[in-house]
Length: 276
Image: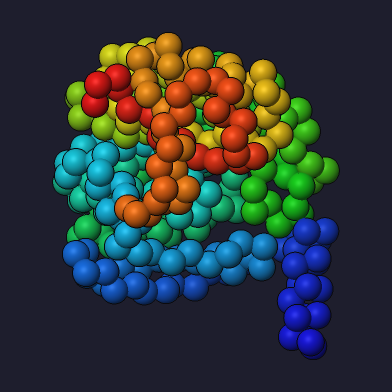
């Protein structure tokens, strides 16, 4: 009982009072990749990450060795690292997150497992227009958060003292990674309710290079907003699939029409080019 109370107080403090948190390097033995290191953030509001072979194999379904992958909204790299393991160190995995506190941990994770991964951490939000934006969180520890968008205008009372930079992904890639774009195989988007806006902003890239997409259906999205997200992705020439977890044995259900987007309060879906 005393241990439970101490944990509750620690979590309550993290929600209300800002504090910098350290990290710890954990290791995981995978059957195929061998020993993997991961920097877990000691923020009490963040559940420690476990790297599993099942998760890496989930991404291997879509990501070929040597390909270009993009993780938009990486947080500390909990999906970035498994993605990068699937792509291998001959590939390139770009991880975008403007939150400076999670970005510090992301940079550490990018520095680990260099014989197996090639992660490039980038401290930017992906936006419709390039500029500077306010960033807010419901937690003083900034374990999550975002910039104002069509779905979530207010992410919380705690705001970064400095603005974050937003960039147009297409412009950035064509300037810095033009030669690698033909190898673009996979894009994951998880940006606290702004997934639709991000997908619209990169629609030209999606049409040209046909990567597999993963995005989140945010719990605060309305019926109309969910239908719009379905329409946008479908009209890009993609089939949508609900999946229960980032695991090779996850339950998968095809999202046939817009109303199916309301079967689950919050969920991730992957989208495959028609016929793939």
